[in-house]
Length: 102
Image (tube, rainbow, N blue to C red; front, side):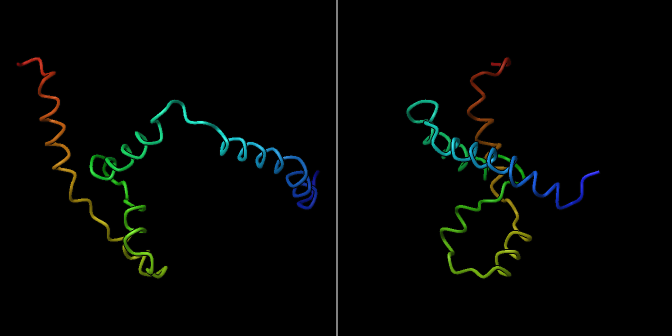
C-alpha cells in the first residue's frame, strides 16, 4: 500500500507537469473565429440580466476596486438580481416574430 508521501511524490512528478502543460496550451489557443471573443463578452454581459443566479463580478470589481474582502463577501451574499423581468419581456418581444399564433 502506498503511503501519503508516495502518493504526493507521484502527483508532483507525473500529474502536475501534465496539468501545467495542458493549461499553458489552452492559454495559447486562437479563438474559433474572428469576433468570437467579442461575442463571448456580449454573452457574458447579457447573462447577468437573463439568467438567474449569475453574479456580475467583472462589473462590480471594475467599479469598486478598493473594496475589502469582508465588504466583497457581504456584497456577494446580499446580491439580488432585479433585471430578470426586463430581460424576459425583451426576449418575449423579440421572439414574437416566431410565434405560431401570428
